[in-house]
Length: 428
Image (cartoon, rainbow, N blue to C red; front, side, top):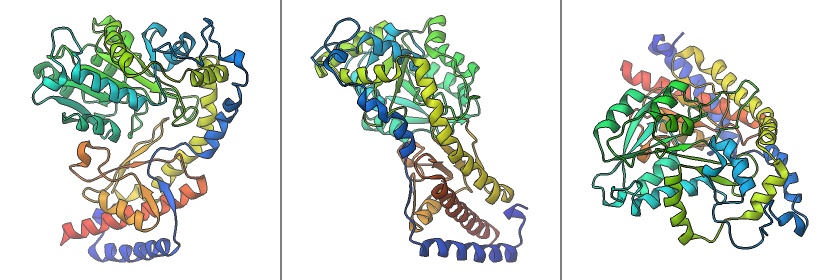
């Protein structure tokens, strides 16, 4: 029975019971952190042997005979390009291997195009008055922070089950040359966990932007993060763009941050020859080269892309019980009351839940008071402004399963309390 069908008296009785449960949680002095999608200790332990693979000078020499302890090789050693090409879904010669952070590469890419034209005959983006960027929502807060930092107006585009609403995107980019790009997390999107359909990828590849320097910032962060053998598949964007005659439109990013060690992984981007030429010119000024010893460590540990996929099956085995716990708690505690909807992803790091409208901030605050820290409400929208105050990103990876189970009990209790209070207001 939906809460909307309850009488006022039934709602008040239910609210009294729920508040008693909530007070008990507060009294327990809990300390549960689900604020970000951090790998848990078990996941980090899977990669610990990598710390011991680089144990003699001879191993520091690349296949081409280059001593990786020294300066040089701006765009990454060739074997590292080969390894990362599988994650980026591009050819090895289209790969630029950077430092430890794909977010850093994204920031630098936007920064580069702010001062250097992204296409011949175009202005640097800094010179474009009222420059805009498309932001699928709910989406990744750090993407939005980058474009906010560089002064872009952020235009939201709703997500569908197949990806961003392509009808809206096609209409907007075809008519407005001040729209310079779009953020995308195409596989196991942050936070919804959906994977873009083949049709969506092809429509991206065949866009006809008014801006010749329009760029698709394709953050393939969760390309190998399946929860089971039956994971989603993603059509390679670069190949589709090349077929469509738009090879310069995509810039594709990925890293091993949640494959090996966050903050000590290998990040890379994939791009066309024209885009790489522009970006390399910037990096030639910015650095003499990135951490090649870390590239060597990853190569010795994985050897090839198939070994990365085998490694990530271990991650899936660790994460799946956590995701199952979240979904089962939602099914058990809130599914029957008609107050929330959530995704059931087959990979990635997050579950997205839309709670009763205009209650998300209150829920997050109540959870915090009970000792459960969540991602701030509104973080999945540009400038933190969720127009209906309903989306919350759940990050199941870090807590132990037992802690996660308790955390979801607390969360579901808060969801129900806030929904009932809002419904009572509506009935008043």
